Amino acid sequence: MYHYLGAAPTDAGRHAPLYVPEADFTAQLRHLSRSAIKTVSPQEYDAGLSLGALAKTAWLTFDDGRLDNYTIALPALLKAKQRATFFVIAQRALSAEPGYMNLAMLREAIDAGMSIGSHSLTHPRLARLTANELRREVFDSKARLEDALGVEVTSFCYPYGNFDAQVLELVNEAGYRLAVSTIRDNVNSGADRFRLKRVMVQPGRTGASFRYLFSSLYHWVHARKNRNRWKAKHRSAP
Ligand SMILES: [Zn+2]
Image 1 (cartoon, rainbow, N blue to C red):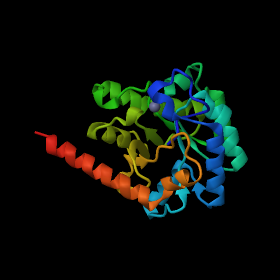
Image 2: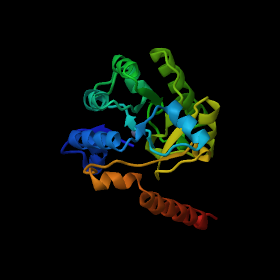
Image 3: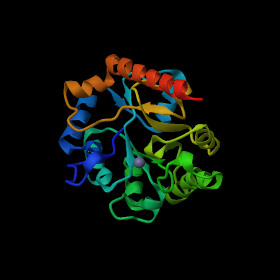
């Protein structure tokens, strides 16, 4: 899980860890190539999930569809012959909001072998919406991106990683095949299809600290944290 590439602006505050320097990203792509880790499309990840065949596979995802994804990530990906999926906030892309990738940029990315997913229409916390608002965010973002780009949009990304059982069901009903969360882990199974766990790549992750993200130790640490979080949540429930 990436968000933005480049130096964090001075006013980034708590968002600073979301900015990965360009040099880190190119070093990470080099590591993937050298380690024969294959970067895949959502369709390939989906097939791998069904077959339980995701070893040496990475699905690179970028949340929010910001302009640096086009100016920095795309050329670096092409140079390294790797692929990624950009989860875009449909309304911002469709209205060519400054600072975000517009439709022409998204078409160029698709032509270059990248994939586009929906990160909702307006980036709200989905579990707080009314049924109608929720339907609009999940269904309309898919339909409008598909109309504008002429490709099927098969993956969804929950804004703020926020979802509940109703959100999850609607994402399924809308025809998405996969949905990504912000729950951390580097292992997913078919049962995780609509709450896929991800690895957050923070600035400074090169060399051994990047390799750690792919390790069984990383999986062990985070699976344990996720289990404890789940237990704590269910203990505090009335
Ligand atoms: Zn987001």
